Image (cartoon, rainbow, N blue to C red; front, side, top):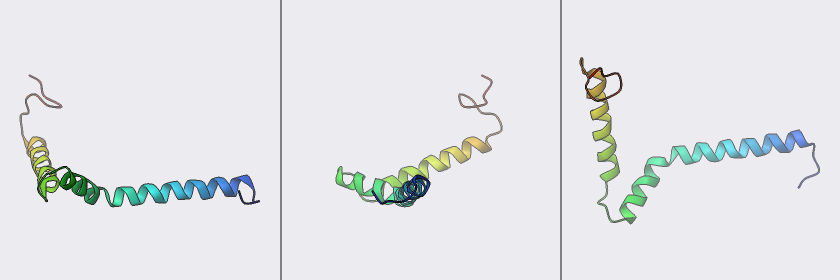
Amino acid sequence: VPPVPFDIRLTATLGGVVIGLLFSVAYMTETTEHRAVKAGWPPGTTAARRAERAERERIERQARYRSGGAGSYD
């Protein structure tokens, strides 16, 4: 532990945590793709699933009358 004031140590620690979180978020898609391939799924599976989910959510948002979802009155 370096002989510096506590507030500097705390700031450096928080900065390191923030940088680590930014890197983990930045490489999230590549990491999930790599894990899916290691589990035996063909390459590109996670991107296809993500695109399907985005399309499904887009259609749900644009639907005039929704049923069974958020904001439905059935």
